[in-house]
Length: 111
Image (cartoon, rainbow, N blue to C red; front, side):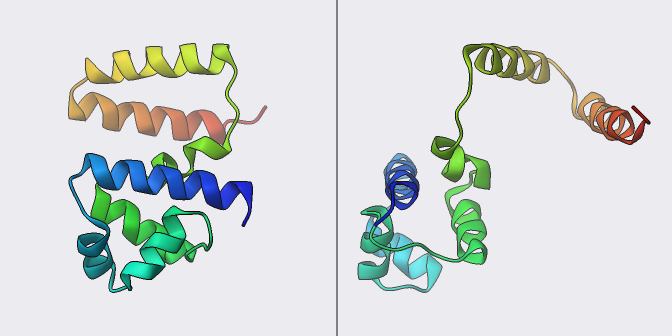
């Protein structure tokens, strides 16, 4: 079992509990056995990327929420992310859509 599997498993278990699901309920929604969910949460196995996407959907989180423990963020990264969340929370849906277009254009602009 790898450290990555353990981190993802712990995150899945925590989010599952936050959402009020038992392992049995999650297994049923995923079409998997309870033992498969248990192995995933204990870090003894890993599901495919397709199953991770499905799992994120069932748990109503982004896939990044399941994988977030795999990334190292500096304090500056965390500070900027917090500020982005604050600013995004103040924006209307239309403003958010415009922001996405702006960001996409920014990435396409020659450096």
